Image (cartoon, rainbow, N blue to C red; front, side, top):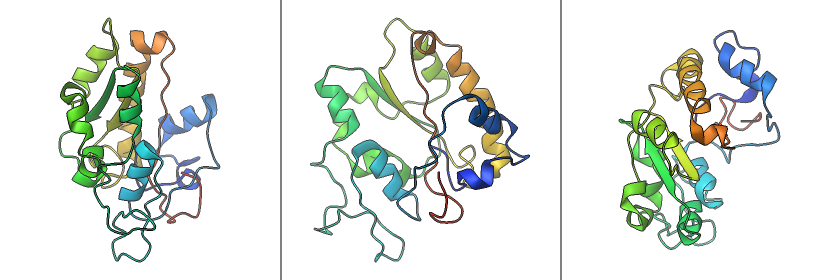
Length: 196
């Protein structure tokens, strides 16, 4: 998941030639919006479908709307639980230095015990090797650090990161056999004024 900048800011931006080439050649879901500012609620929503945006919290800490107390969500079902129950191989690839609130195990600690070999795996070297392997994961989440996700480093840095990562994924056996890549942004720079 990328960070901070929405579609209206990236579209046509000279610092994002690679991302704009993706916009031109692949599907773009312009009706998608983040829950609001800051990041954590969007990360929770992506893996669980839970709307936990808490507008009354000063830093918008995630809480389950309605009960306001369950901040770990350990009893909630995630896409990882669903993959595990279906016998599907899954992975969470986390780049070194990722903030804990971007890591799904911070909110759903039970997923780290579903299949410990599937969780918190370094990328990109491990990921590319697995995607070229005989038994690649059927579902994966990739969580880049602030050095690559645009949060601290800006649009150009994120564009450069994706311009190296996406072609390397597209060159894998996994992708050749029907794998699909979805790139998400957690929030836009206008705080929900445009598509992410």
